[in-house]
Image 1 (tube, rainbow, N blue to C red):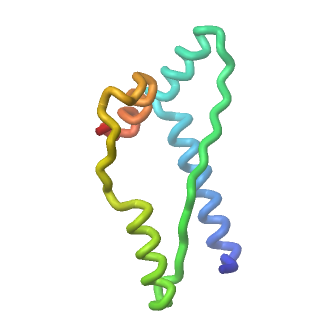
Image 2 (image 1 turned 30 degrees about the vertical axis):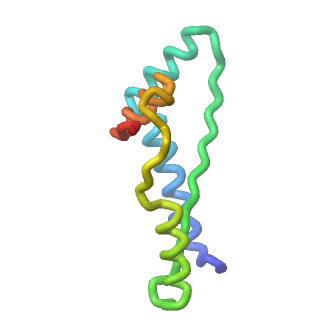
Image 3 (image 1 turned 60 degrees about the horizontal axis):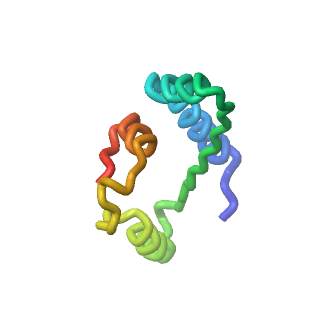
Length: 100
């Protein structure tokens, strides 16, 4: 699907906004500082997947919803709380996500 330029621009702005929010997060700043204090350089690359669909296309909608429900539905998994590193837990907590 070819996106209109204004939608492409909005998606780019969303990505920029997410990066800015992460960069300005006090906990993230603290963790970055702590890592650098241990004499490490830090390069962080994040990837976000954005799925877009037109609201008025019923045939594509059902296929899209099936794929999205398979990808994003809450699932239980075998990870016990002990399988998360402290760094993982702190990162998730900075976004108010509790590791289960």
